[in-house]
Length: 491
Image (tube, rainbow, N blue to C red; front, side):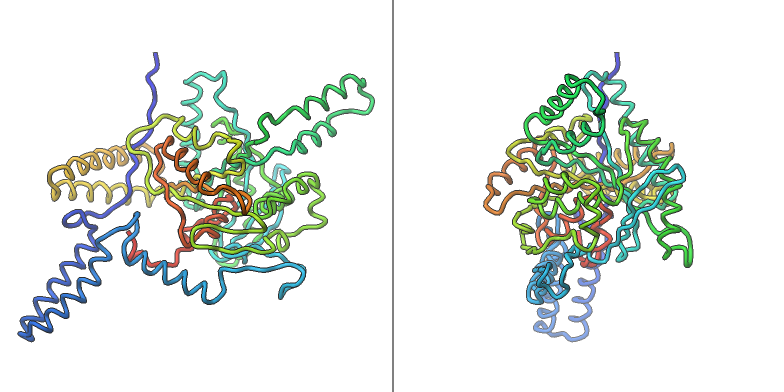
């Protein structure tokens, strides 16, 4: 009899300081106390000392107090940057026939300087390569056909989960993969893909009855009118040195040589995958920004290359608001994971969040794994273990109980990393798209309920809805690489 396998021991890296504060904030507070003491000793003025105390408090308190996972200074800087961008008109975007660049509809924001090209692996597979020039990252998107868990025993499911963990660990060893993004997209079912596939399979000389059965079967596929599309995006750093790092064909050659191994590892994890070609990536991005074009894009298929390019698939208009994102007649809201599940979970932990729902037909869940190289992982797990021990020795009461749990978790991570496991930072982005007059309050309540069932704590991506929408597409945009706030004032 096999025991139920649980997953957990997630820990957020945190340097231990005084009174539950981080080490940096603790040292800042100690330095400010010394400054106040020196001011009084040198001036002997209560008024001057009071001014220094007030200035020190204004600097220290916003760093010590966090609001929804952000420090006070982080909130202030974020609001200031958003107000400045709005004053400059950077949150509004207009393209199309009567724009400053007629005929173009470039992708907005962080994707504006990206480029799309197509190459071939040594095995003859065509694959699209997205180059994010701002960070010099290269992304390959793979279509995945998950096998599901119906009529599959628990031992096989555990094996698939273990193989997926081995896949992530293998990508992190060389330090070339920045992130792996797993995306599960639910979209409105048009049944056009099934009909096109059936039309390709049916032979003219086949019996009329057989052709009729095939066409009726294609028309009946789809069920509730919502289908799932799964994909995995691998984002690579520029490989090599010197001029090779800036040569896209050379990068494509290096990545293409690695793809066969990636596909084999995913197959062992129960995820048979195929690289997306350029026309498929064009249709994917276009249909997410302009949801009204979804049916036309599926009907066009490969013919989309005749009318669309990477410079014409962006929205004709968008407006990046504080708490939502308006694009081509649709409204999207993106939430981010604020905290992982507390305690251990089963492999079905995200099932309620991922399940297709007719009341939320356009929902996208992206799990972003940011991988540490083997050398980084060793230093990080050792530092986390030392910080956990220091926190356990300085805290008392209830806090010491959580500190002891953290010591156990970091000790286990240290042992597993020594046995060959990888170390990964992860986060979740949840994007829901609906019409402008859609019931967004009701949708938000549904998302909150689904995330609660998955034991995830989520919050809206305030002041970053446009960027978060693009990141959740899974086309190589890794948000922490584009951060505009210094880590010194963040939590």
